[in-house]
Length: 298
Image 1 (cartoon, rainbow, N blue to C red):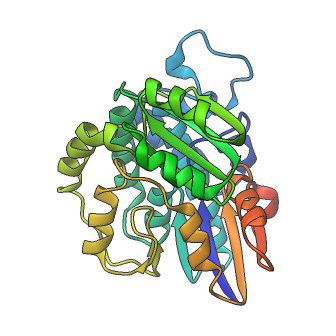
Image 2: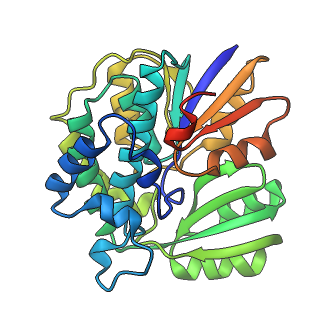
C-alpha cells in the first residue's frame, strides 16, 4: 500500500489543538522555542476560549495561525516517525507545504519557525485584495467566468466542487452575480493570498529564501505550484518561491495521488479539512486522520 501524508493549512486551526498534543515528546520545548522567536505565548493562544481584545493574541490572526498549525503538525508527524511509521511521499496545502518539506527533512525545525515568521508577517501585512469561497458550481462556467474577469484568479483549487477565489472586491462582487453556485462566501482574511496581489511580498520572501538551504528530501514532495512528485531540492525551492503568488492546485494533487490503485491518505493536523475534500473527491481510497496524542497510529 502507498501511504501519503498530507498537511493542512490555514482554516484547519481550532481552539484546544495544543492541548491535544501536550503529552507528546518535545511539545513543551517546541512551543517554548517558537514563543520566544514570536515574542508571545503560542500555547496560550491556541487555548484561548474567548475572543481576545488584542488581535495579536487571536489564533485566527495569520501571524499566529501559521506557526501554531506548524507546531501541532510537526509534533504529530515526529511522533508518528518515532513509532516507526513513514510515508511514501508527502504534500501540504498552502502553509502545509512547509510542514511537508520539514517532514521530508528539507528544512530543520528551527529553519521552519524562522521561515514561517517571515512568511506570515509578509502575508498579514499584504493588505491588498480579498478572497471568497465558492461551493457547488459548474466547472466549465467557473473557468470561463474567471478567464474573462479582470483581477480575479482561483487561489485554492480544492476539489471539483470547492474553490477559493482571490481578487479585487469589485471583481468578486461582479463574479458572484454571474456564477451559478450553491454558496458564495467572502472570507475574513488580510489579503488575496495565492494570487498576483501577493507579487510584492512574494519577491521579498524569495529574497529571504536565497539564504535558506534546501536539503535533498528523504521522500518525494508534491508542491502546490506544480503538483508532481519531486526529490530535487533546487526544483523544490523554485516551486516554493512561486507558491505565495500562485494558486494551490489541490484538486490536481488529489488526482495525482489517486493514480495509485492502493492508496492510503493520512491527514496530519488538528481537524479534517483535507480528509473531507478527499472523501468527496476521490473514490475507493483509504483516508485516515491523526490529530492528537490519542491516535499516534493509523
